[in-house]
Image (tube, rainbow, N blue to C red; front, side, top):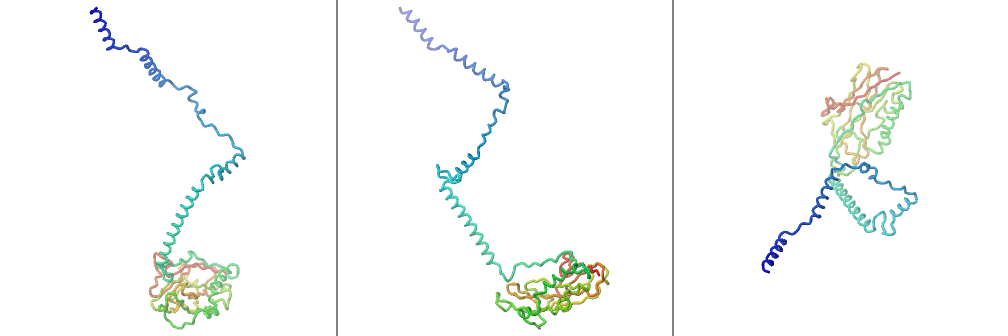
Length: 331
């Protein structure tokens, strides 16, 4: 009995140490791995390469009635109480944000403008500039053709209208001094007085005796004036002289020149105090009459300012202290 019991106990211990392996499970796992590897290396079917079936199908066309319903729903959704896709609270927040933003921008802009206006004076500009005369200005006409010179006489008539004697006597004072008309002792904002410059002083170029200003006779008149510069005192105490001559062309073609009232800019019209204080200021002019210009001769005329402190021969600025125009008078 004892030997049998001993053998039986040894067999049970051997079975416990070496449990049997399930062969079906291991074989199944290996089979699945082999199938996956085979599927990876297998070429795609023709059906899989047809990309048309993967495209998004077009939406069916919507009728006009459906579109109108969608628009109405977008404008006002009664279910969610939304206007244009937003609730009342959302619209309120947006409006408050943009109102605050634009109020801030307006306040910043207003502050900048206040600082700017506070820092500059309306009577003393920080920077001065001068108006450039037109380039290539030409005076060409036939004395016998009224249409060819009508535009010149009309322009002179319009320019000289404020210089009428009655207007000058009413607005400005008669000055006799031959020196600068200084008015710096007045208050900064006080209106300055201006000296008279009457149209009748221009003689044959005034348009009073000859309303055609000599153009119908082939003896045209032109008007010259200096640019207005605030506080400028030209000539260093001496009047500025005006001369005209031929720049290109035969010198003898220019003929006799007549200046009205004279070939000078008197000092009594300076300095200029600006349009806010010199309300009735009339710039002095010098009228030049070409009394002996030759017919059918094209010449280029240059008129210059001459005086102390005047530069009229600058190589870099041909308009400084001078102006040039072409003159061509026909019979």
